[in-house]
Length: 339
Image (tube, rainbow, N blue to C red):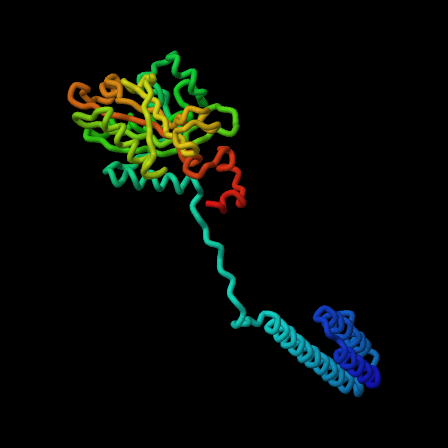
């Protein structure tokens, strides 16, 4: 058995010299020192030895086991050190190499134009007010002088949740909520998402954004409305920008007007973009209807006001000469990186 044990130790150490893989190292340990390993097999045969031989072989077997374990641990230590050194060499940072600058983000075109609009109105003393997108029929229609079965509702293509709850078709509902809570003077704009059941095309979407404006005070006139909108358009499109007001009808304003913007492509001369008219339709506006003021507890004999609603997508498309509204929502970086 002495010769067997010495042979086992020599073979184990010889294999350990050649091994270069952690997994193979474990296989060697199991083969020589495991429960069914070669050293264990020798120990199981000690029952057949004489009383004098048993302690000698037992001591030698323990010594061989200890030597093989020590050799395995040393080899494992060497392999881990070599692996760590290799990893460090692979991860070495060359500080002389040029750095990689992170890509800088930028505002989405809609957010950029909205920020410009908000800056203009904040400079004129307006507050920015928000309201719920899931709205009641009362705030979206009835309080705006559009009772049930009013024909103007047919043009809204509304998403109804039930008979009295809907997705707002306009942010005018925020004007009603504001007039209920605040007393004149009131100067607010209300930007936000609105929803209408429109088919998607180059100029329509079931989801879009509006910026509603409202001013209530003593002595407010259509001249104030025109001056406010002219200032905004000049800030957005340049000092040579012109607007015009055409008579129109909205249930919640009286008188009402459609506001057109001088075509930024032909500057009023007429082209295919403006259908040879020189102007493009931009927004609806007017003086707040007395019934709307009364519904909110404001005396129309004392106070007057104007309101308007601008489509954020529409003015953004004009601001950047975009001809298809869908481009603003497709998240195509080739398009967005141009702004």
